[in-house]
Image (cartoon, rainbow, N blue to C red):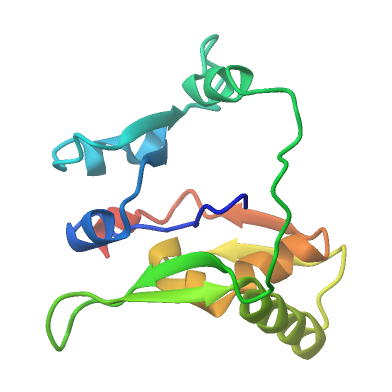
Length: 158
């Protein structure tokens, strides 16, 4: 991760972006209307439009990067990989940080317990900001399984 953190955001909570110091927000074109009115002047929004548009800002963002591999290696397995925010039922939402080791062990546990393999299919039926802390997202990816969002579910209504 080269010292960066992944953060799945809930667009109704301003706290997460402000607290985490996010510098980039990658958002699927389908969900752009959910973030249009957020006060995120300090954050670079990178739109992901994989619906056949001749111009994809995400691909342009990647093309503008350096072709050189990242130099930083993970120095400690306890370095953070992800931050997830609580809903703030007892005050302001709080950031919960996952380490590389914790995410790996949680993913491995899911792989073993759920007998995941290359043929596994993970169907998204709830928003990522809600379930990222379960690490199942990484488990499904780790075994080379398929991840699919149900197009009939509108997360904005949840």
